[in-house]
Length: 485
Image 1 (tube, rainbow, N blue to C red):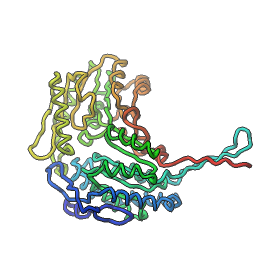
Image 2 (spheres, helix red, strand yellow):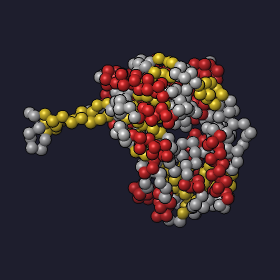
Image 3 (tube, rainbow, N blue to C red):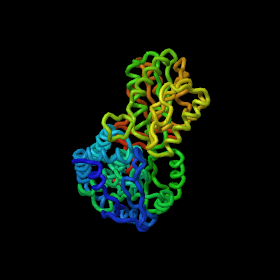
Image 4 (cartoon, rainbow, N blue to C red):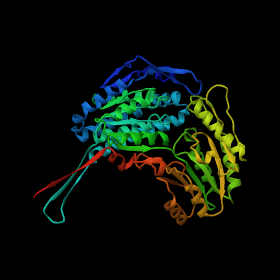
């Protein structure tokens, strides 16, 4: 039987280095908090810099042999991991809900989504290919081959504790790269459980190493200054990503950055309003709005704005806020007190500038980091929540009069991750999508993420792609060999 206690009891509490579980060199531990109660769930090891370097030692030591492993074998390991993860879906879902807060239904969805990256890249492992051609002058044969980049540092966020790990680990295993994974301090348990699962299916010692730490900056700097590390991939905030890019220059590391977002949700006058409201709920409320792809700005044609706001607010008001393990709950807590304060401050800033609260607008409980699903109208352009990533269940609505203005408003941000477009006019959809400065666009749908598609952004939302055929290329170097015939 899957219970909170049995799930917590099964999670490894140590660092995973060179195929073994070990305590921190300092003996220190991290208290993992339940955001719905603020109580400690368990303590896990708090890695030192030396622990991080030991993990890199293991990854570097395993790299040559792992790169030589047949692609079919790497693919079969991923396939076995996929199947075992699906078998244990309920355990992983409950574990995520406990440490991150999202309702169980959403955690189950993340398990299915995250597992799919393992299956997708199990199929890509055997499709790594170069090319053979003749030079134009006929004097040389041109051979290109693709080889693993090498030991990779993976820094994963707290909002999708499983999927953000499998989206990086899957292609790295498929490509033949070894790894040091540093999960978020708030949600380390899911990654530790995943490491145990990958060990169980036979991933060799040293290929995957996991270090949990509160000394993130110090540990990451030490690893990134070590010439044995060849790549860093990060999912998180833009300011931290910018710092990592600067650090990567000294060793000329390969870098993949999936950073912040400020997604516009455009509703044109010919849109199906019912479908737009359904999509708005998905785009806004998945993960309580704590997603980089979450709709951050609702830009609605003035002819539909009042009706859209009324229907959307009614749906938001009907959401059930509570602990994610409780029956019927659709909105869990935010991750911590800092995030709760940020969301509250953004709403206060908007209302102080003249915005109207249609529904919500406050915290809901004395215990836990809960915030009401909130809809705001009449939000002025200079409000902070139009410029900053909200990362919470708050939906600001503004209006536009013509297509040109809608695109201008959508692009008026330094971010460029995801955008959403609702329209029944195919020609309008094509014109708008071509002009939107975003890496991903959802048309008449509120979710764009798909393991078979390249996930990533432009501008301050980063560079590189995860998922799709493009995802494995981030872990491969191209080598050219010129051969005299």
